[in-house]
Image (cartoon, rainbow, N blue to C red):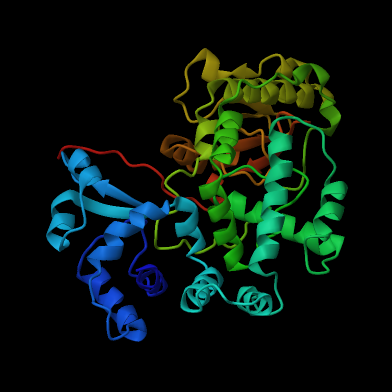
Length: 407
């Protein structure tokens, strides 16, 4: 049965963690059965579909009103399955792991050889050309999340110490290679909308299988999910009393990278949307806007226009949060008004942000007088970079919500 499930995943016929007892599954089971059967075996796919529930990885989901009957259901024919069971799910972590061809091949080899596969054969299956094998990726992902969790909790750690300790678990990898793999992990997390370690700038040319390793790690570690959720929703601390305003502005805006192709199947049901949760963190947004307001006052004063600095208006607070911008400021060179939208994150400068349809349209219509201030690393040493003009000139936009009308 597990071989049949893996075959369906490999063919792209099982893209969601829901395994139905239907013709697709039973036909896949028959193909595997015909390869392995003996003269005494019978092609009864309903047996493993029922019995695998005792494995701890195979979970029956009863149909409405059938929970009690499903729990008591004894071994019988396919009719009992159709009557009582809606579908089966695997453990989230296992389902994510099975998206990797290396893991599938290893598990198939283990099943077909009755777990007698030797260490050299395992290594051969797990290795991807000259790249990092699965076990190495597992080790580096676990190490990365250990550091990220400490960073989100504001606990001290040293990246160099982590790299040196990690070397003993890897296949003769240099510290530079480890650091670059950590940057690859940052890139995957950015694409998933999750926070990343601030000192590891995202490097987007990563192995495709690295994303599968990360998704499997998240699926199997609910504590990671909890920490990410708590971090995005936590009450932020104000940093404006200790700011060196002369070093706040970052002149290097993030480069626009090629968007990675989305997988056809949905990602983890339990994956947190860190960027969305930060966008809904009103206190974080307010503090970021106040930070940008004070920066504008500092900037205009340094340019010799303290009179304009006094006129800078926190518009979203004074007039409401629906105008398409947050702060009304001024350009002293061209002697015109500037409309400033502020987006704030506790994560790094590559962290995705949310922008409303109204805000986007305003940036396009008022491009000559519009700026988006992206405030980042709020908890550590907050800085900002500036996008001047229409926002979609700088970023790739992806629709995440829709208005639903009864019409």
